[in-house]
Amino acid sequence: MLSKKLFLCGSLCKGMTHHKLIEDAVLTTQEARARGSAYRLEVGYPVYCSEGEEVVHGEVVELKNLDVIWPLLDQFFMYKESKAEKCVYLREIVKVQTAQGEMDVYTYGLNPLKKPKSAQEILNARWRDDFAAITPLTEELTLEEATYIKKLGQCTGREIVPYTPLTRILEKRGFVIDKGRRPALTKLGKELFQFLL
Image (cartoon, rainbow, N blue to C red):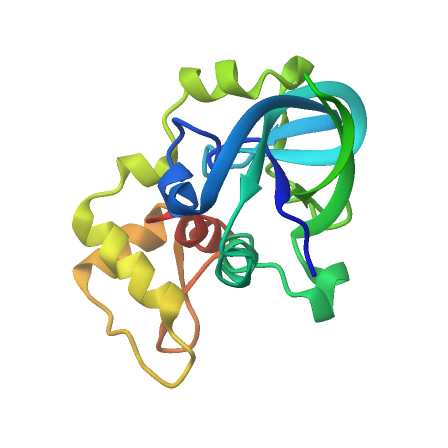
């Protein structure tokens, strides 16, 4: 059974873009810090990595509805326990410091072996300042572009998403690629899909 506590750094934190995904499952929130590093993904969102010696500020949340929230978090971070070594994110236990002292909690951290080449380490792990200074690519998409990317991201391979003039625009932006007569998401497109609500 997974614990009730989770260390967050990035867009799932309170007041951030994706917090509403977990908001109903959060019982308590407290400031916390962990050793590691913070990276900005090409899509513009900050993520935590347990590898590193910086002090990364974030939050520890206590969760309810564990049978629902952990699968939802696994899906958000595209984490599969059976193929953990191949995942971009790892669900791992890290030591965090809070006002109540030190504790071991779960977190979803960037897998150092699968870190995207385009991910940039954030100076002094000050991810909130970095995030405030940039606009994530998800916020630059039109509703039509976001809908098309979502359709491609949800495709199981059986459905065919047709080519449209929008496909060509998204190809030029590096989000979509031609996979032999059918469009598919590039790595950046998959990153966009992950962070689209």
